Length: 113
Length: 112
Image (cartoon, rainbow over all chains, first blue to last red; front, top):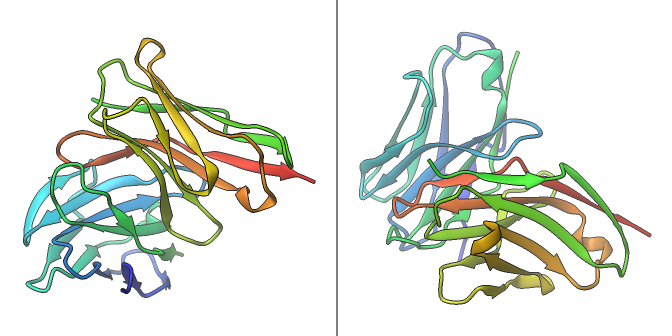
């Protein structure tokens, strides 16, 4: 079975632009979570979606938004990009039950210039 | 709020030596504790998970971790380091909402 997939793998954007990152969960998984990992730091929780509803949100500005589609894939959108948004964005999927293991994708490396 | 602290941003051990990576969680006992490993330019891979069923948790690749409530610790160990163990290791905690809170990570270097 395929693992969690993310696209694109790398992305370079200019300050002020908008970006959309995509994630496809493992087949059968209904929950998707997004994390931001700045170089040299641990991942920071951004969003969690379960059955297309937002289940949790981390301490990120409103420039960050996400959604989950009927097939459980997900998009993370970031508006008005700042240099500080440069990071590895990780997607994780799980069955969505309490304590279920989260499986991470390889991430999307976003560079804002 | 739950949090984890990893002691030592870099740890170096000789090949064949004991690996010990330290992690302390905040005072309230979390439902779930994890160790993840991240190889360069890759996502995170789950090494092991504590769910209160047993205090000694065995994971993949010969790693294990022991939950000690009295010390609020969940240290990761491996009896004999291998060159392939060189990576970044993250301790993490999750509440029943499944939001994972990660530590800042410890980079493990293996010396030949």
